Image (tube, rainbow over all chains, first blue to last red; front, side):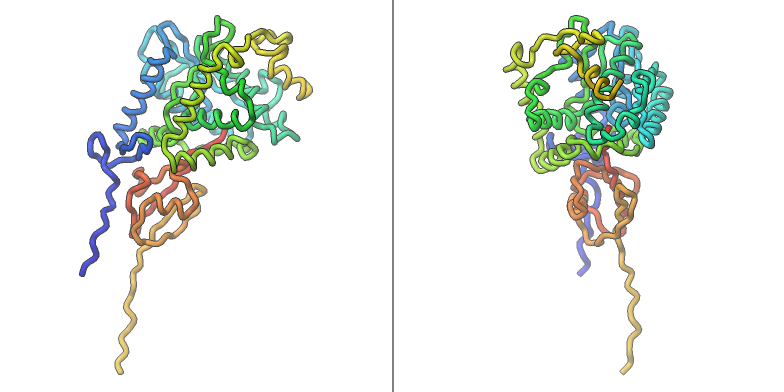
Length: 311
Length: 77
């Protein structure tokens, strides 16, 4: 008896019946490349519209590291707003000075803005803080992500100000946001958990927007791959020291076994945010007594860090 | 007694190209991509898998002499 031939075709797209490229486990459906691109762009447009993240007259600074998330973000925002006269997009790249890593992503960012014809501003740690991240981290590698995070935040804002931006868009995806919720819980940092960087700022700081908040990392990678925009870039050499790396691996395993976990974490964060509105999370924003930037204490995190680095 | 010459057995092998670009030969018995990834200790949410250059979902059945490329998607920084 001849063996029964094995059916090896991929599952069919739930929308059009073509071979699928992804299983959206949270939605219980399969999508082909074309329908995945349409689905993601529609969901991101929906997030932007429902939260009024971008309004006519805005100049949106798009944080563009050159990695997959920021690349997808710029491509989507360019498709949504690139032909609009009342919305301006400017890509902002921060060169931290990480040898063997950042050179490639900076090149990738430059290639993308050239193809799209988007204005581009690059700021470097050397120019802003006097040295590269590699130098700052000598003897402090375990604190890499904390130090880099504070400096990079400042550098992004500097680039956004240079662009005259009214909004600062970052490529944080659902995985990033869910990891942050869990990390803040693990650290016992309630204030950070309920802080909303997109809140009304009365002009004291540039509000941040995160249009990819409800898109999974794998969806973003697949979105780029099916359009031929995916680049296999190196991993940040300091990532091995990060708590995020451990949380990412753990959460990703849970999400795989229990689809929807990340989304539920985010929804719970919103419930807590609402409950704490005007209380712990709504602490007054003042000005740093040294640099004058908005901060919640007397001295901002950046000035404290620069002192500790002997600057 | 007349001895028969041994029959030539052509055995197919599935080829796995792992994220670090090392190549692993896998059992050609039909299995889903998900099963193969789990055998390698890889969470399907952290990778994309292509067969002959085309992306396939993790519950696609693969076998025989398929060549699978596993692409890691998580990068810090």
